[in-house]
Image (cartoon, rainbow, N blue to C red):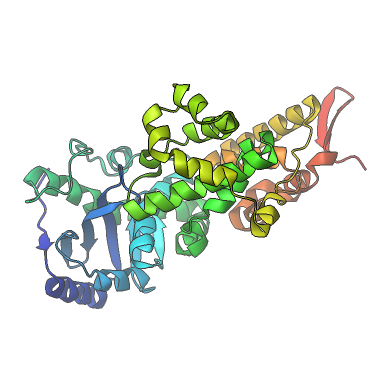
Length: 392
């Protein structure tokens, strides 16, 4: 594999110069990042890779505090941004700089619309469509070490130098299938702020465990989760380093029995109890506030799920899979499993995206109606046929 020329950018002046050059002379960029997220609340951005019409660039983000020229490129609608699995990269830039990208395509998503599976690794996609075999030897390398080693540089460049040619190949296939607009529609979610904003309260209130707890335990579960989030952010630690997610329900259910019971429970760890007992006890004992009560009141009573309902929902899931298989679209793109499960247990929930765009096109009006009125859905056996639908 021939070596690729590149420019290593280590100061703001060079970054500003080259970003200006790109904006004037290139209508596209390939984009990727290397960051360290382990044990941290906010990942450490170590390197940014850019390919463009005027060359390839490695931006040392550990040396440059101000990446505003690069952020302006992301926001420039006249420049196409090409990524592979770019959601985490854009999410990081949004968290660090409040930047929302414009005019984005993602080759991983593109492959999911031509029947080649989703998600697919970059290595696999490049080998299939460009006949290039990439090494992944630096996947777990330490990107904060300096100077950057030659093997790291080659690995980082490989993640962007093939993006333009790869997108060209995939775009041609999508146009032949009439699915280019489907991909562009799906990639537009990268431009939506809702895709990146964290809502811890919403996650906590929607947790299935809340249905199994008494009011005081629910309140404690909510307070404990918010406390963990705040401490993780303040200390720039991962949530799991502050308190394991698996440990929280154990603490919540054992709290009424007191400190000694928590200390003796091997699932918790006595060092955690000794370190945080005063906080745990305060969060457990403090009276409920009106705002907290209003939040707890939003927790709906879980419906009684009958065996027939389970079977019908499983049947709907198989219908989804069949539709995706016939259309050669990855099922996870149509609807995440988490949304399907929520729909299964919450009769009022229906993802709004199902009735729009390419999803509406491949599902059809009948299937969407089944979803909207799934509580009325029935299976009938008539004249040697199995029929599913809403009884008239």
